[in-house]
Length: 84
Image (cartoon, rainbow, N blue to C red; front, side, top):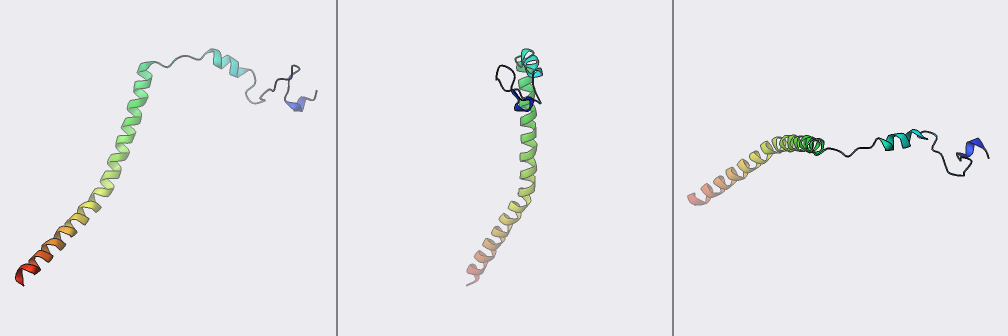
């Protein structure tokens, strides 16, 4: 048995970084409360909404200008045909 092998005497591998404390943490595991889950969901929805609003506010002026240009082109084209 070599200490660098990472094996105990029983032959089971040991993770040198985590080792035994993981079992102690596993024993303390608790089920999350519905209130905590709801709070996390609200936070996610709030961030998603903020991202969507920022995206829309970035694209809205471009879309508005594009539509105004199309409308102006339509008015000019229609006014030109009425004179002929």
